[in-house]
Amino acid sequence: GRHPWGALAQGQGFYRHEALWAGVEASAQYNQPLRLRDGIIDYAVPERRQYQIGGRLGATDLDGIDLQLRARFIRDEQDGLTQESVPGLGVYRIDLPDRVNRFVLQGREVVHFEDGSTLRVSLNRQQTDGETSKDRADSPVDETRTRRGTLHSAELVGTIADGDRTWVL
Image 1 (cartoon, rainbow, N blue to C red):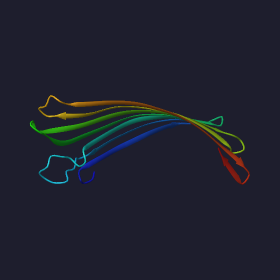
Image 2: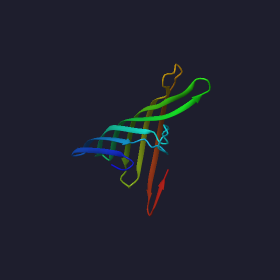
Image 3: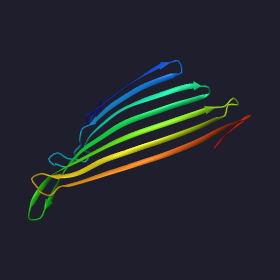
Image 4: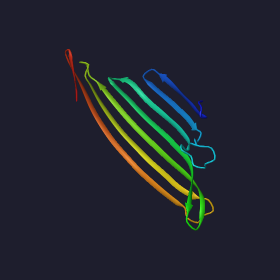
């Protein structure tokens, strides 16, 4: 915990049997909203919650090869608050919810050679789905924006042992 009031809880556990292993991890975080002055409705920092759950599977030293697969789900939530004065209509309280879901999948293979050199191949995919709103209390005019994105990446790293030197490509 901390002040201004917030909390963080996290945990993880792993199991290993010879060259194979598996693990799970989870966390939750909460931050209280912050106002700059008493008596105003606007949040300078919105209320925030984040949840994460994930798992990993792997194999170590299978004939000189290490494998790892990791998957995670992350949910971010923010709840802002402000007000807006509309000429001729009055002052409206506006809730500003923001929700984002992220899905991450990562795979990695490392090949170890007898001379100490290695070749590492990593493949990653991340997908993001989000929604941001302006919810004006007692108003027929609201806004909602949705967004979606996908990111793919691949990385190939070779480490070459060359006597007293090491080359990385």
